[in-house]
Length: 84
Image (tube, rainbow, N blue to C red; front, side):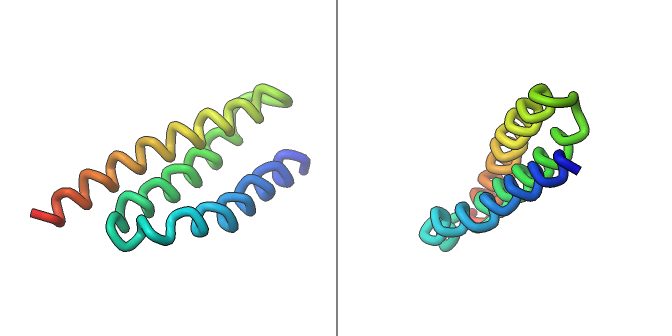
């Protein structure tokens, strides 16, 4: 149960915090922002399956950042394609 609480906390922070930051960018780069959010969420889910204890927390953080970066790059590419 503790890991579920950790994942819930991280997801809550993402849901509440990221939209506040992304409001302006959403108009110009909707797929980049969407890709970042989806990638980060998938990273949390995948990272929560790795390790235990402190190692699990680190795995969640690293996979969240990696997923966000990968999702951002994919979304950025899609936004650039839409502009042309």
